[in-house]
Image (cartoon, rainbow, N blue to C red; front, top):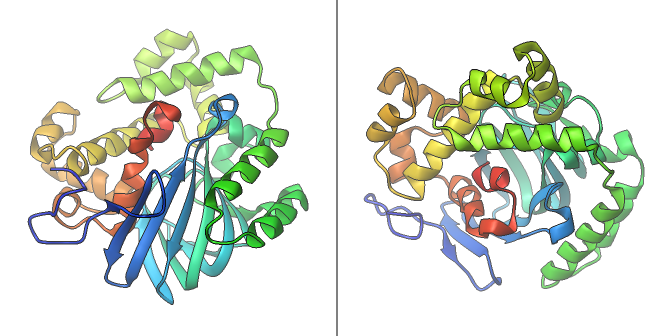
Length: 314
């Protein structure tokens, strides 16, 4: 059973809508929620994941997003707040750089909202921010204040476009972001490739395997993954194990009890705690009543090979 089918409790599910390719809608209780994905051009796929246009028609909307990679978000309409896992609450600036999140993050929107976002891979993070990613983990910043008025000018141009110009919005963003990407040393590309492969390649990633692949010490790896991914290897391994399992539960209909055994969790209680922490829902909720945003975010996997594997997973 996947997200395109009615679940056993008759809840609303994400379905393709009339908005174009890779465009989905959920008839949530607060009103329709829509999300349309755009893959990056090939020369930017090592820097950025998908671009997406998210909209809600309700005057007020609240939901949660799973742990994720950093996100660049332009508030085309509406405003809101993020509620992070540690209890911190931060207002969303018009151009928001959301750091890597290490737990489910709630958000609340005021007014009918439309948000254009871009998922950032580590090389994209280095290009747009350049600082240690762990310093902005589970936090956000005003990118105009931090990195200059070019981002505000891009927001102004996006706001001038009409609702039906989604493809033009995406093309403009890719063009402007392409001007900002910075070359990355080969040694860093090799490290990022090794970490990505480690995160997506094992059911329960072991730090010993990454040490062997990179010939780096655990301390060196912790420093580098904090810098580029926002967390040390052990926490990243937990995060991506939970993300993999959640996708298999919600999209593939796999038994979470079976996954608990396959993925190296201590017991079912441990499995439930980890999924709840990183996804914001229990395994049972993922199977029977996933929220609108949970469904739509999981459908990032529909982009297939047009985006980096790490972005399809996270």
